[in-house]
Image 1: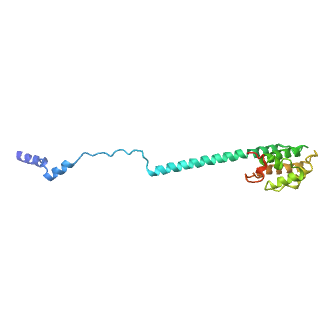
Image 2 (image 1 turned 90 degrees about the vertical axis):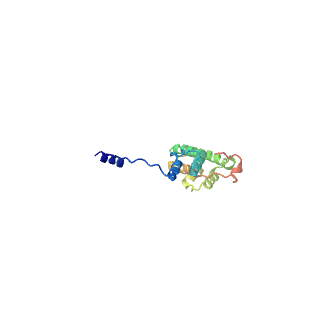
Image 3 (image 1 turned 120 degrees about the vertical axis):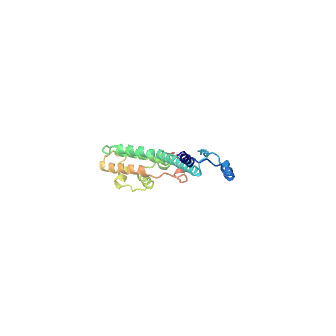
Length: 191
């Protein structure tokens, strides 16, 4: 029974054999596992550069658009103020036509020049208003400006028509260009 147990031990635990010379040479070439270096965040990949340029272009475009819009609002602020002044005129009073006319003159002199429209009265003033805005002047508004301006009479219906026309004219009148004869008149305001 002793022989059987020795035989069983030999079967269970074989003695290690020395590797062949080729295997020893291959084993000597083995090295420990090396982890790769960490990936740096700089320099970024080309896609990140393109994204950064795109973002910069979008921000620059947004800033330019905002500045342009702000300048336009600032240039046209006088229109908003004049329209609110015109809307505040009481058309039931006798001095409604002179008030509306004064606001229209102030806007016209500010936009064009004093020499271009400051002295105009009557039909010449109405013709100037017609040619400086792309809208038709109602006959009641014309009559109020030509006939009722200095009379002091009060026709609320004509005054209301004149007030509505004046508000539209303030909002839609054209801006003179730098090369137009209106701009070369002398006192063109920077609005």
